[in-house]
Amino acid sequence: MGKGKLIDAIFGQYCEGDLIQPTFVCDYPREMSPLCKRHRENPDLTERFELMVNGKELCNAYSELNDPIDQAERFQEQLRLSEKGDDEAMFIDKDFVRALEYGMPPTSGMGIGMDRLAMLMTGQTTIQEVLFFPQMRPEKKVPKDNAAAFAVIGVPAEKIIKKYHISSRSVLFSWMDKFLNKDDLLPLQNESTLDEDMVKTKDECLKEKDAEIKRLRKALELEKLRSHAYSTMIDLAEQTFNIPVRKKSGTKQ
Image (tube, rainbow, N blue to C red; front, side):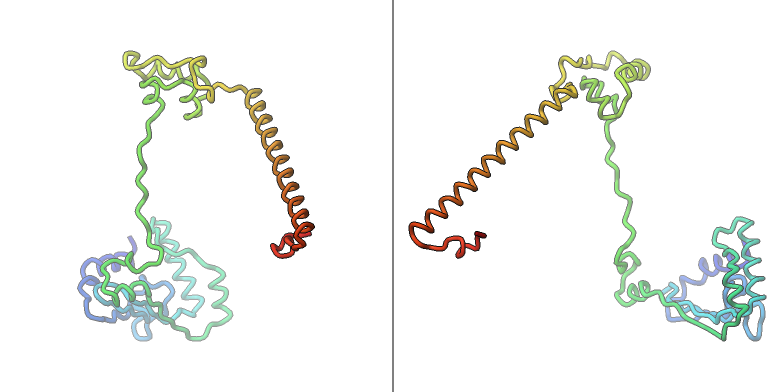
């Protein structure tokens, strides 16, 4: 564990929770702030502060490090920490260092945790209460019966094969002989006793589809005849009573 991470762990354990009133924690150690400018009086510190309210960090602010040589050295330190197993260490951003070489004026900034501020202003105890899309708990998975449970109650073999994508009946029966107690099993039904939906052949399925197509075509022809009859009735009504039915109803001529 690096020096910065150790200091952060000690501060979080023994200090952070006791800072109830608004408190500014200033001048963080250099090891904790790899992107912050060194303190103008103490080079081991940085120009950084955090606002702590009710035992939680509300904002973070610091002067940006604009020295490319110092920044490259900080990145090297972070790389050494990463090689030692620090999963929070930063990587070397060569593009960022190169941009600093072109020059960056004195810069500073502050980031406020708006969700934490909303939690503080609304008196909530958890941040989940103020997030638009809080992380939900994992959905509980309902346990499902396996193939053995169906085999025990005598469900047809083909249904088990289809449900669990077993390659063949022989594979199913060999698995049952190996892992199940035969005394607990009911005899599995053969293909001859299965429901018709389970033993339909490819030709039978095609025949059913052809029959359905013929039925739909016949229904379409009947609808065409019905439409033609309605149109003829409208024509007769217009001729007999001299009433423009289509024009009034919006029907196209």
